[in-house]
Amino acid sequence: MKLLALAAVFALAVSSPVLADDTVARATDHEAAHAVTVRQDGLNLDTDADAAVMLTRLRSASMRACDMPEIDQPGPALRRAIAQCRADAVARAVQELDAPRVTQAYLASAR
Image (cartoon, rainbow, N blue to C red; front, side, top):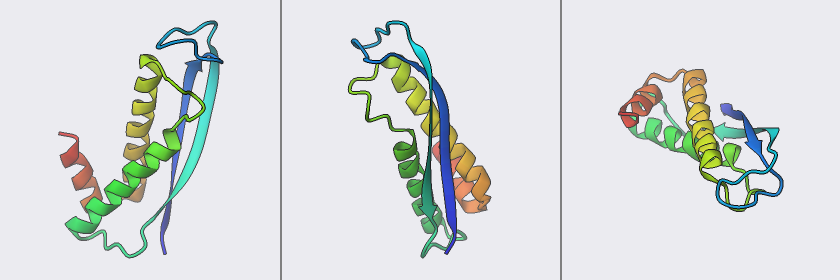
């Protein structure tokens, strides 16, 4: 059983509490780091179908790793930061996994 730890680390300027949409009063730097384990169980990453499944697992894990449930209504800047965190986490995980068909699927989906 192979495991891949997808780690997402990003720094954000957030206010506590968030006042409204993208209004931030005296934002402070807040660093969030989360690691999510992604399993390769039952997958043959030499097939296109299983590579696609693995990419779906990585994307799902990136959503969990980059999620900030403590922020009820993130403003546009925070939403962009979360989206970037997810994209960066998937890119790093694909690179670390070093499975050619997963990389192909990832690159094809980025077009």
